[in-house]
Image (cartoon, rainbow, N blue to C red):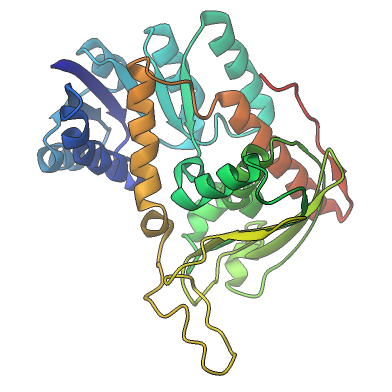
Length: 345
């Protein structure tokens, strides 16, 4: 069997999820003749050691450089945003593919030198936008690409967290659009093949006053305009008490489809005799995108093996961040903001 060893840096909430998902993928790749192994590192050594024992991985002390030096074929970065640029460069310098959680860096301005660094050295870096691997979004894209929806006249994307993260996290997240809606901006660009060129945003804060005190809102709406004139809306909230709710409604000249409409959808009909949806709703994003997160890492392993093209490049991620930045600026100024659009790679 061919052995592929992934090195995971960071075993916080997202890192633990990735470690468990990599362990869950072993049987799938073993059936394809690939022995998938995992090594991991974190400054919280006892915790990291416990996670390693749980998932059958090797714990390596000393950080990313020693992890790479121990012998890995690729690097998975699940640390905080401020560390992303340095760790991406470290992996690129080592000549190994890198998977990094979004975003590339804390701002578009800080991301651009990283893009240049990757390009100059021929690095291979996949950024984590897991919705591209969700079955519903994939089917919506298939139908659109096949012409079954026709031309799109309206798009409505929404992300509703059941409860907010800590105020400490929100204070450093960059704002609701950058933290949350950036996934919607990415998926709209990916699905339509078009660029968002203007954003007009408004927001409110009717929940915890501390969210407003750190400069954010708990609910926001952005009207987006695409380069062909199509319009859409992107909404987000930290307080969707019915459950974690992520949906995309696409209305076209031939048909309309909705991603995220199933028995777990966090809404209830008020029409007489309508019981759908009747299932228990998702509580967190990890539940909602459980399968997508595994598929995302499976795609990265295939990228390492040279079996596929990069499914989400750093340039893709920065394009979504440009829209999020424009939405945040519009929220703060109360004016529509044009989006600087870079040429597609």
